Length: 429
Image 1 (cartoon, rainbow, N blue to C red):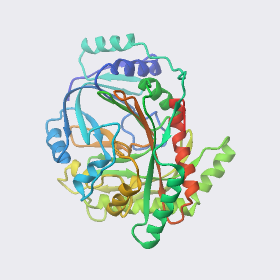
Image 2: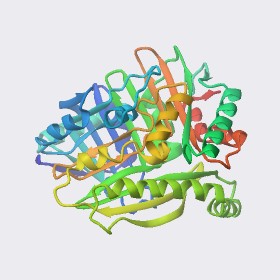
Image 3: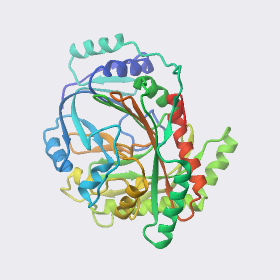
């Protein structure tokens, strides 16, 4: 573990903006921001900024084995990503759709700089006076001012509404036939030749969403601007937890309406059925490496409030067997059940048939490992993807389709989930 130095911050909000502005000049940046979300009792990182890659692993084949080797030499936190199509390395699956963003299947890096804010203090992984020089350079950075684009971006639907409605009917017919029970069906909205300022867009998104698993990720000319409310997996010692989200409803205009909406979400048979199916799937995933009898549902159908929506979130935990490698735990639970469905492998085969886009990093994960093998990983949803080289902007949104799903209502849910990203982009569909 590197030596560290801490400073008390007089203006924490200003420092955060300046630090990200300073970091953005590097080719590799990963910010993890919990936004001090009060309902995440498992949070262990308030604000983490990893800058510049001293070493990295970017694997095409045998990605999980390559990550294991890479982690052996980690002496501090390492940060990175897992893309959805890693599924093809753990199951007999394929992907043939076009990926217009181009994040790698897996990428983790050892940062030159790790900057952490906790309880009003900033800590640098550097000794004094280098840490003071770093602090001064950050304070000299001038954040780009937030402004609306003079030309509003217009996003195209990768899947037309009529086709989406027809596909939902087809998915329901397969559910009726017993092919599977639930599918998370996703669509893309995109714009070509549309330049954006990733920092400005992220700051707008992060300010409005205040999500507990927000991420700014820059990898060369590729950007993830993420306002995720969902944790995929967290490991602390021998304990592993997962917090799948299934169930969404809009926010009201006042507390009285919000109380009614929360009750409506909690008592919705459809949303509860979606949630419990994924809870059962997660229990099965965690059981693969758990000590017998330790898999438990700590919270079922928890209703959590966010600035734009209410979500139904459940928490599943387990105690891991001795000598289980943390990467094996991730590999055998990936991709997360909340973004696939049940049974997972059969659903993933059909996802490829119904969807018109490659998910790429969407419904993958971003997070970090500690040197002792602990980790915390999010679910990449509620995100804007941007390829600066091609000026391609993309958002993907999805919903769980069960037999009771109403196609038009599911499409409306997609638009509800997309609204925060559209506002940050100053865009329309």
